[in-house]
Length: 303
Image (cartoon, rainbow, N blue to C red):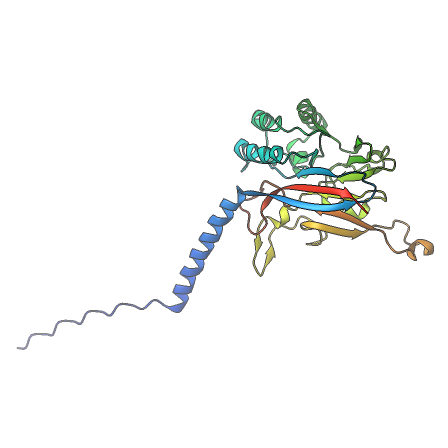
């Protein structure tokens, strides 16, 4: 009786093209996710320059927005942003809202305030609230209390108010577009012929800015926060899509009496603004292709 032949060893399975592609995609996604988390805690100082009509001499303005202190952002991040701002030696510091993330509690506000107390500028520090400040501080009393604590540090909240910071420069602010009431007339009441900067957390207010404002400064969009190549930004917090996503923007001024033929025949005025990527994150601790930033403006007199 003959011996049965030994079974041949199975040949190693060759990985399928689909399997290799899937594993490669997962690795790339993992790398992108890791890079995105790392990028969430890095920031830049962005330098911008612009000539403003009516300005009599140059002024350096630091603009910060969207700290989102709370879920993913702590005192260490705020400390780095404050130090970078102070090192830049601005004449004026402006905040565009969203100091807090939605889950902020008063039990943890001490660390934030301890970092913010180091901000100083010759012409002052001014701020407005954003939608996350409203959803964190859900009562008028809570918002008033937080504004008072900021004011003790030298940070004046100017929701629907304005202040002349120099003989040729006026700073005004309006309350949040989503949750607050915007009384821009009250904010601009004393601006006179000064060059006027307007703080509006949400850039969707830009079409409704009245004549006489040189530049509107906003945040809110985070520049998309996660901007995927060939796909675009994941976060679009504007009714205008990506029109006011980031950087220098402009909008035709709304014409409330457009039914009037004389008004309709008039070319619309153009309002100019700047939208920062902001500093913190919300929703997920990730940034991709829209770096966090402190913006440093060098404003000069227009020729």
